[in-house]
Length: 102
Image (cartoon, rainbow, N blue to C red; front, side, top):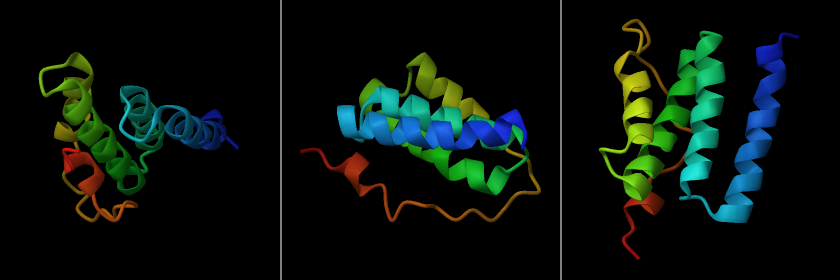
């Protein structure tokens, strides 16, 4: 098992801990999603990585705004996506929790 493979469950645990402690829309939760996505991307697991980048971006846009450096960083990762990767299955039913203004 590579160090990257060992890192995946640690990042997943980080997401769970931060969501529980801070709520699902906190910028630190977005950072955990971004970190997990980056590890997957580095392993060329693009289809697995993209939904986590998308989730991180959605949280960051809501919490920090489009012009924040963290939001722009995640957007850049998605902008540089390999062209041959076209199919992505989102692990989230919807992002409605991010658009709810309550």
